Image (cartoon, rainbow, N blue to C red; front, side, top):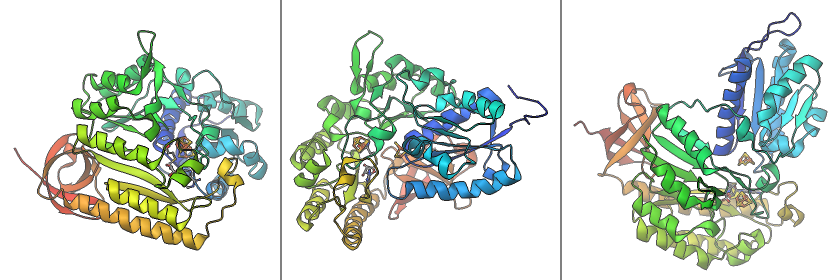
Length: 450
Ligand code: SAH
Ligand code: SF4
Ligand code: F3S
């Protein structure tokens, strides 16, 4: 409902700036739904057009806080011109920094974390009524999901968070501190949310969690369901054409999950399975819970059940104590697995994590050199896998207009980006495309007309 009062001008527009992972993207869209329901707010594309600005932040890697404060500096100028503007900082930096944000940037009205954004309508009400700053960074046991309106969704791909938080405590990672303990949503809630998105016209569902395959939720039979059981249930929903999930942990991989890739026609043949390092000493120091020799059979099993599966991983170079020999082990693992995509990062100490107590003793120059070598190898693998696609006819879910005029962009089943000449009305459909060219990170093709 819109508030109209002489001393409280109406709020009409909302701008959300999102950083970080897909779970933050999901949270931002839920915040938009929530603010629309509570205040009738309409999303705008530029902060200067907004009455409410929300930042949904990420603190996974270095300089996260600096980035937030420099962006806030821009918003401060907008607020000088429009003093009724409300500025909120949410997400993982909000959770970690809490009231420190308002101490450094007093023009910030609200600070909140990933588990408390369902309180936004009350927070905004309080800010407007009492003209005070508010902070909500508690991690309530009750699920925020119970307080969120039905997702509206738009486009053809819907994201659904199935589990929150993480209990793995990898030594380098802030997520267990920013998102809290691992909590799985009940199966029925997830199925209902997926069905609503499908009924709204989406055809692909992507299930999200920091450790999505660690899912253990309450089933409709009052028993605990694991991730594979949930997958089979989602795969049966009416209207579903494509099913994906991210991110998986090697320790939570099961044979049943590998079999599902072979059995479920809607489960797309792509898996992101981060290993971080190929050195046993570093894996142990990172507290990843497995060795390099535990990882290879998982990959073999996946390829046995689904020979065309595309695989990707995240890597960290320059973890404290990483020697040249450790790094060579990572290169060796990459050569043996042969990834379709890889995401490579230089280690950066994060506040509050166990690794940040060890000396960050690999020099920046060596981190740069190792990153460069790893990128050369993984980019070569990506390039070769892309080249392999030439001549194939593949199904592409058309997602949007591409940056090149007259062209559309979509994804293959195995998550490769394809550009082709097409009509905007084809957006949202799955079209057969013959691949004609490959680039480092994407493909070009032509539409096959029936
Ligand atoms: N839950 C996922 C990944 C979460 S974070 C998993 O377990 O794999 C995404 C990626 O960021 C991680 O896989 C890791 O490669 C990278 N990352 C996390 N913390 C980091 C740090 N302190 N320095 C550098 N990279 C980091
Ligand atoms: Fe972070 Fe490890 Fe949890 Fe992934 S599994 S979110 S890297 S602590
Ligand atoms: Fe970043 Fe938080 Fe996601 S730290 S990666 S936004 S869980």
